[in-house]
Length: 549
Image (tube, rainbow, N blue to C red; front, side, top):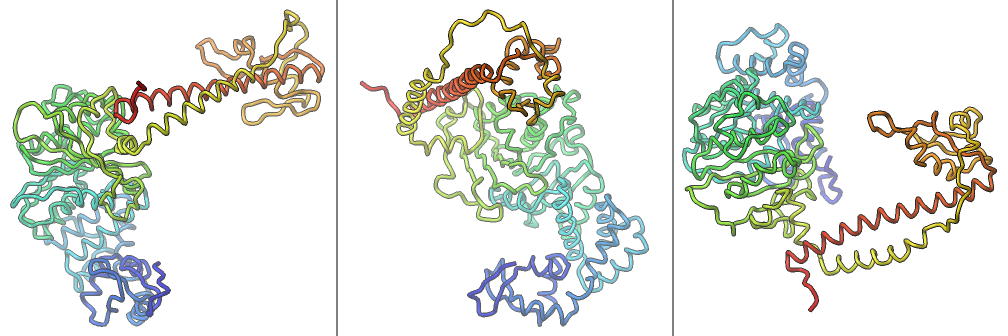
C-alpha cells in the first residue's frame, strides 16, 4: 500500500490495491469507476496510473458493502475453480463461448446462474477480461508458465517496432493470446496464432471474437511438428516459447527447411522456435523472442548464434530486469531479429545493440540509462563463444584497463614473493610410517573423531586435526578411497593413520597445515594469472593498453 504522509488526503492507493481490498480484479475496479458516479475521484498519480485516497475508497466500499461480503466476481471464480480445478482454462473457454453466443458445453449448475447475474451488469468483454486477469494472477502465484506474464508482455510491447498499416502479426506459441492481442492491439492488424493446447487456443479465439477482432485467427496444434500456417509471412512475429523442453521433435525434423541457420540440438528447443519464427517473416519483417539468458552463451547454440550475427539478422539483445518472468526466478532476454531486405554480404561494420536492464526494477522504466546500452560491432561478437549476454559487453566498455592491470600485477607479484615463505622446512624422514597404524573407524568408535559435514576432525586432546586430515589426504589413503571406476570418495572406514604421540602429531600437523596454505596460495596465483592475462589481452585488443616503447 502506498503511504504518502505529505498528502492532505492521507494514504493513497492504486487501482490494484483497491482490487485486493475488495477481493475483485482490477477490471472490476475499472468497471466501478465507469459505472458509479460516486466512486472517489483520483487524488494523485498520472492519468494512466491514478491514485485514490484510501479513506474515501474505504468509505465507498463500506457504503456499497463491497468490502464486507464476497463480491459476485469472486463467487464466480471460486465456483469455476470448484467445477474445473486444474482445467481452469476449459471453464474460461466455456464461459467465453456462452457470453459470445457460440456453441459450448453446458455450464455447471453452480456456475451458470452466476455468469447470468454478472452479465446483467457487466459487458461480456469486461467479464471475460476480469476472469482472464484473475487466471493470469493465479498462474503467476503458482509459478506456472501457462500464460505469458504481464511484465514480459509490457517488455515485448515496449521494444516492438512500429507496424505498418494493415500489418500481419504472428505468435506460434500464443497460449491464451495475451501477448499476441497486446502487441497487435490495432483493429486493422491481421493476427495469426497457433497453440498446442486446444482449450487455450479456443479461449484465445473467443476473447478475440468478444473484442470484435474479425481479423484474428487462432488454431490449435503443434507449431514445430505441424505448422498450421506454412505459407504465412508476417511483418512481426512475437513468441514466448516453452522453456527447457527437449522433446520438441528434433529427430522428426532433422531435414526441415526452417533450420537455415543450423539444426538446433535437442537441448536448444528455444533456437528451434526462433528459427520457426524467423521462417515466417517477410523481408524487412521483425521477430521478438523471449529467451532464457543461458541461450546467449550455451556451447550447443554457438553456431546458430554466429549465423544470426554474421548475416546481420540479430539487431538487439535486451537483458530484462530480474523478476520479469514471474513464473520462475530465471533471468530472461529479449532477442530482436530482422530479416534483411535483400541478399548479399553483410556489412561487418554493423553492430548489435546490447541493452542491460538487470539493475532496474521490473515494474520501472524500460528505457536504458547511459551505460546500459552499447552498439557492439559484429566482429567483436564473432569469437570462439559468440556470447550474446549484454552485461559481458557493457562491462568491458566501462573497465579501467590500465588501473585493473596494474592492480592485478601488483597483487600477483606480492603473492609470489610470499609464497615461498609458506613452504615448511622439511628434512630427511624415517623412511616409512607403515608400521603402527590405526583406522579412522577405530578412532571414531573410541570417541576420538567427530565429523563436520564429511570432514573428520579431532574430538580429543589426544588427536591433532591437521595431522589427521593431512594423512587422510596421503597417496595411500587416496588409493583406498578411489573406486574401481576411478571415482574418489572419502572412505574413513578404510583410511589409516600412523600412531604417534600428541607432540609428534602437532609437528606433522603444522607441516600439513603449511602445505595446505601453500596450495591455497598457488590456487589464488593461478586465478590471478588467468585474470591478468585476460585483462592484458582484452586491453591490448581494445586499444586501452599498449606495449611500452
